[in-house]
Image 1 (cartoon, helix red, strand yellow):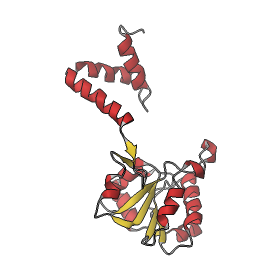
Image 2 (cartoon, rainbow, N blue to C red):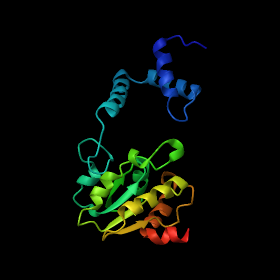
Image 3 (cartoon, helix red, strand yellow):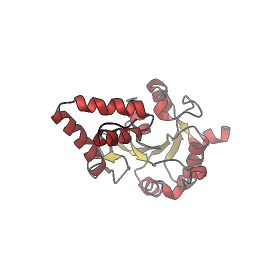
Image 4 (cartoon, rainbow, N blue to C red):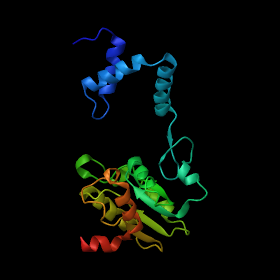
Length: 206
């Protein structure tokens, strides 16, 4: 059915591009916006525009940031000698929600997946290697998905990073195989961080 307004139709079409949003849900969102006070609607639109135009990425860890360095890397009390390697922002937020980790992060931006055309060169791996070369480094934690792609990425990183004085660990298998970290409950994820194991021992037993 054609909508009575082209502006409304365009808004509905944009909402439909969001993950998991169908035509009816998109229509409900668009109609909700029409009920907002003009200032509230303008603020909503401006926040989306600024999200796209002003948001940047941390020059150190590739986390999202408002400035050149993200809040985690800039925090004076974070342990800079420990780096937790994650796939994306959702996993970083999942680990932060446990309140069990006090180091810093490195966001790869994905995992190696030849089937999807993602190679090591598409990820933030070289910058991780450069960070790992710092003499103060004590530990690098692999907190990647327990999937074939995640395991492949961990093994690739292990080969790139091994031979240095710091330890390389991974989350304990409290995280179910095949699960993304973002869908793991906070208690289980927190215990997996605390009970992390040397990475070499995990792939030798798999």
